Image 1 (cartoon, rainbow, N blue to C red):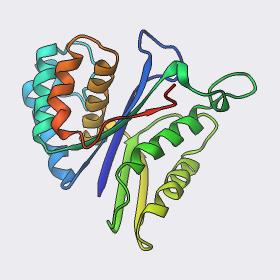
Image 2: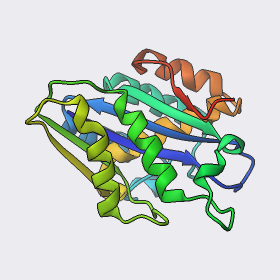
Image 3: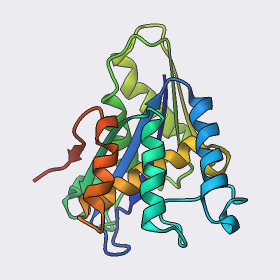
Length: 216
């Protein structure tokens, strides 16, 4: 099993967005989606963008029409989506340190783990999890990998091998697909322009209702 994930939004006030979203998907043939998405933006995006190593959902110079077409292309790749989200204002005090700042690493690790749990239990012998590079304040990448692995192992067979890696999104188009999924979902949650349309495009690929963390 291959699972790719990325996030959209911030834990602290950054702009108008109130939500933080983890978007993820699993796919049988990760090489095919990687190749197809790269081929798509090198042929369909504006010429000045086609040589870029990645094109994020939030990139300037992308029309809403192109976002819709790209989401439809992603949906046709048979990605199977699960996601989780939270309202920034609902983050519990237990995730704040003595200076009242959010323990970013611990919070991120916990919600990523819970999103991944939605794919389990499973009898898969190998689970490969890839997410974008991210600063984990108060936690090392080794700790992150260990925490995620420990959280998932109880739902797997005794001999299951779990690989958790943070990789550079510029080198893997599947992470970029996850970025587009999370970008579309946060637009929907924020009730932004065309958010409903974006969600409808992905709806049939979503395996279950998104999990809201710290719901009040």
